[in-house]
Image 1 (spheres, helix red, strand yellow):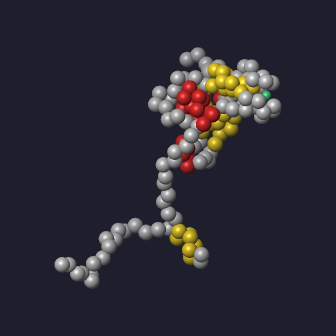
Image 2: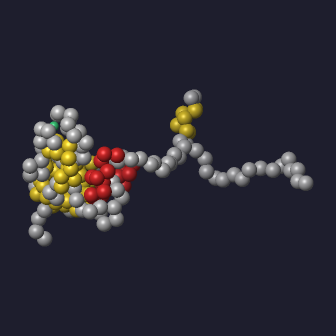
Length: 164
Ligand SMILES: [Zn+2]
């Protein structure tokens, strides 16, 4: 039998960050694995692994979306998938000096809204391989796909569509 009134839990040198004492506000690490469904957008994410960009087209009014969309925002009808071109041009762009946590280490980076021939809406993505000062509206760009896909919209990015 062991009865030890001097027993103590192990201590370490870590503490916590206190932001306020009344009410007490402290910093706590929080991390979860998040399982979610892409539901009707699944085909878009599966296709990225086949180096394809899938858009959606309204079966009724014919509006053409550069993004996954199960139903038309104009007439409410179902859409159908179609393969987008992988080449387009910059409709507009911005340089991000701040971002969400996932991309904070990559700042500054360029975001572009890509327009495709015959498509009514735009596709937002990253553009690499060009300095902001070299970018312009109407600049030809082409899609590239990560070899090791993560089933995320970041599996696709754009580069300048120029000869080497
Ligand atoms: Zn429609």
